[in-house]
Image 1: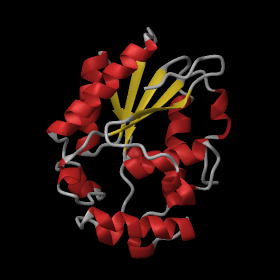
Image 2: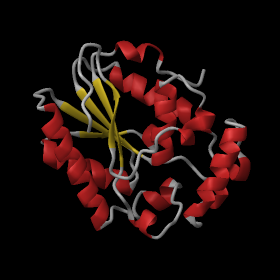
Image 3: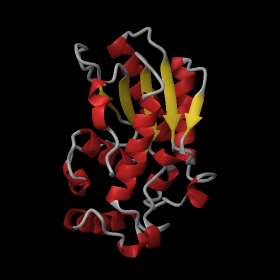
Length: 210
């Protein structure tokens, strides 16, 4: 079993995906996917800080909710800095870090030019189980990220939960929510740096455009 979302469509929580803001890795056009490189280096750029502020202020303006926000984040520096900024704006009391939300591991492409993502994505489409170049497969990412979201969702009722994560992880999570094969995750509408998307809203609520 790779997709753990199951009955999450019946959840009473509103679930958001927030991709970290533009980072120093993005600025340098580098692939930084190994936690040993990304946990203490390659934080947010000035552009990324502004992206997050813009996204969260749009969220506040659009929802006007009094429900409690809960933040779960990848432990990479760029997502940690993103989640801290979010918490500061929405006055969240605590941030939880879950390694299952971490960046997809790109194996031999680590610290190379980010144009190499394209090579991996082409292989993804041909074979979602591929581990060419020691890359983490789309099914492995789907397994860990959907298990995290399902487990976290089950802990709460009627809350606003923000998952702070990375590009491929977000795309693959959306594939899982739509019950689609993760091989086509790059054919979905791209989630850009600093972009916040609603993954799930309880039935009866109007989906806000954040």
